[in-house]
Length: 267
Image (cartoon, rainbow, N blue to C red; front, side, top):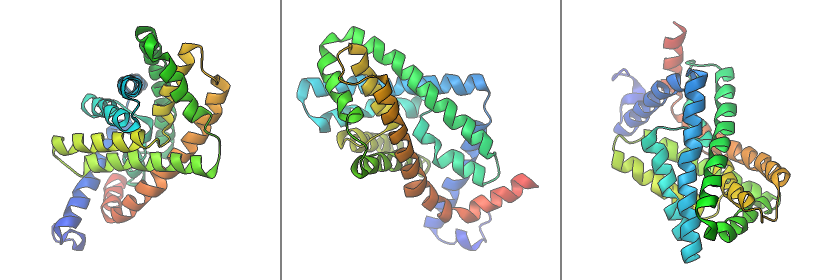
């Protein structure tokens, strides 16, 4: 960063520039990982979210409170943060900014998105099977909770829930990179979990794991074809929300820094 650059004159702009540089510095190795590393971190991401879903279902079963269950889900997002695993919707801001900065290609981005989503779901599917075998008293709550999403319908309202879900969790990524304090990052994860799960926003991986829990009971009022249709709707909404509500606007604000990075990468 050049301190004489006009964009660096105010402390607020300096923080934006510093956050943008941290994003690209993190995104470059993430997009160029080996297949083995990418698969492993993505599987772990599904398991980490599964831990949060397990706690969410337990609290929902014991208290009947959606807000407390949403707060309990923060365990999953904290595990993602501290365990450095990979979640599909965390792949919007950082990787896209890295591609825009010229440090990776769009093919690298598509490779990452596809692998992370599939491995998140696979890891979560296995983990939720273990949870349903370990806690049979949660079967009724799991089946009912999964049906809330899978049988929620394909309307403008449910699409907006998915758009908001993608936007909120991408904002969490931005807040993580906007702070160097671990306390601040954990706070962002807790607030995001409360907003995402407590308010019932749609998230392709989180809610898929809840749906898997219901399917593993054998008593869910929906099947895998129903879940797949729901997943396509949720992924579309999450991508729109993650890219338009958060990523695009952040890229516009950070454009001078990213353009500078692009020039350095090309030279």
